[in-house]
Length: 245
Image (cartoon, rainbow, N blue to C red; front, side, top):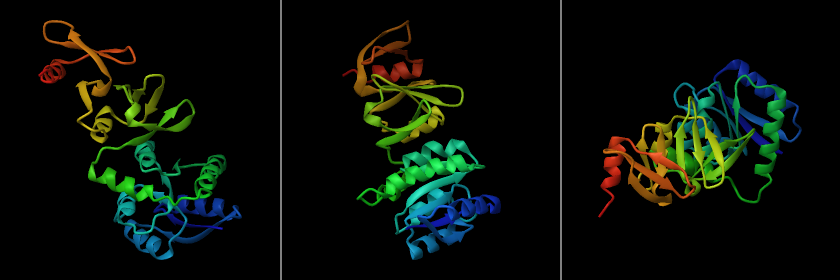
């Protein structure tokens, strides 16, 4: 039996989670709370296996709740705002439910919960990644969209990133992924020693640079290992020139 706690300030969402979990014979809801401070106290006391956690709540946010926990449950985030998805998966959440969610989406989430909790190792990474993110430390892995699925992506494999309308395209040497965040948000989560924003729409991984050549009188063009070429802005070109010793 998986012991779960629901942390949700919206009564309707709380009732939906209560109704759906009541139909799952291997989940027992052992606690419900409506605000962040109460959540920390209840979770550390009850030590559940699974946590349904809202992102925006009174007193403390969901991320702040995770930072203060001494117990480390598996986490499913629930929120009305899909732009928190990337942060949730960076924290190695089991899943991310955008409210309002239906039974079909809830069932899909349950499969991920079952796979996570059937493993031999405890989910210690949730709190560690939350602490790293809140302290502003560079992430080592993120979760990105590839088609209709969400997959893990090591930052070591990122060659470059390009801003879209409301998302970022991330390129490895062989694949393309989507992140639902701004280029500035991505930049803040990457290691500034390796990743540089050389244009308002482009971040490159300096480890994958194969050549830097003049593009015009003031700008430089950067060729990367995947064969792509990015023209740096004037400011970005000035930074690149500073790399020459």
